[in-house]
Image: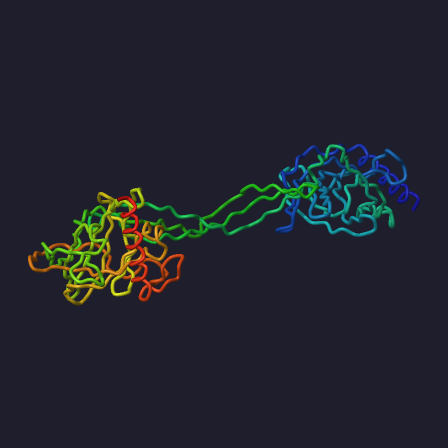
Length: 439
């Protein structure tokens, strides 16, 4: 009995001695041992030195330290994930390792893994998280061999320590992936079409945008700023380029069809006194000709006037007709650009007119004798020598228009029908009186 107890004590001493002098493996882990949950922001994976220290004696390695292979740390979301790789050790012809693992009172499952170094026997992995980047954790380990040698001695306390001094601050940079569907713009090309009229375009092939799936790597700094880089992209639908045909065919321009009318040449015109038959009106010398033509069943009359110079009261006055009425309806007086400030009046009728009641307005006469600026007259049209010919019709004209006072004399308010004669007599009287004084 004493011999068996001594054997157990001796064996335990050998195990402790073997574990305490075994060197930490220098085998390097792959760049990334574990992958963060999909779409969870995470940092890069950093290697950190690891030791299993004696729980009760500072700076003394635990007997289980020889089972430590490698450790890494990575920030996943708001947690720091620690990954520790353990291995079996061989002593006195026996091989055993840590079979249970507790971190701060919570048992952590051991996961069997494959490891690239064949010298790492029976590798297992322990993963746990912490809300802070810590360099020491209270742990417990369980070794079957120790339990067999000394019942109750298989579970031992220890301190799992990490050297985090070389972990960069970039561990707080969370890395995530973002997948987006984006449009691919189409291109537009133009091709000539000799059968299409020049100056016109026609869409031959409508353009259609493509679609691509882009995966971005998103790095979120501790201050919340983000940077994005394209990790990959795949085209799911190719764009269809737009093709536009451009016409090059030269088309002869069609000449607009001319409006042919019948002109009456050699028609003469006079402006006669409204109240004395056979006597020319004082405005007759201002007449500068007439153009008459017939378009369909409508006669067009274009009467032209020029400025006159006349003496009055020892002075000379030059003026012309500024407004014109036909049968009480005012028509526009427009400049022609001809000599002597030539103007014209264009009016129409269904009839072949000979004697047309009109009224003319001369501003100078109005200035000399208020109310005398507008005078009635007869426009006498002589067809006796008229000859016909075909020609192109002038553009526009012939519609009523002009001033807005519709027959009211400017500044006086006198009616055109009742006061013109009195105004004319007064004006002529003033003219005669002026002539007598000159004699």
